[in-house]
Image (cartoon, rainbow, N blue to C red; front, side, top):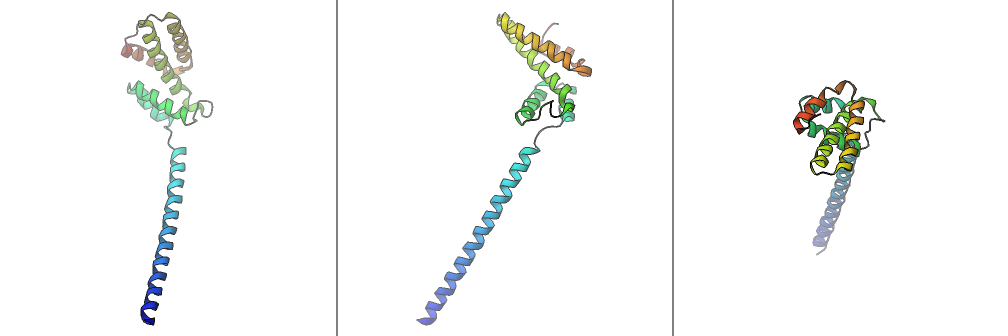
Length: 143
């Protein structure tokens, strides 16, 4: 009987040691996972050259999504001036899209507002202004 009780005590101690070890491993994995997520969130914005590439290949909607994503992540043209031109180009495409939609619906006041935003974005586009012709053609917008 004493031998059986001693064996049970040893088994219980081994079980507790294994449970504690598994808990420590689990806590370590949770810490690693949280650290990895927070690091990924900080570095998950798209760089200016990626957005420029999207614009140059005519993927204007992709560029607009990229700009929206970056701005939502806190990366503005004020924080990094390298983004000013590609952001302006994406803003132009967005404004032109809304201008066209409101014009077709006969909502002249909204169309005028978006037309002004379009012109302001074009003025900020600098050397990327050549893209406006292709954007307008894609949208079916006659200038």
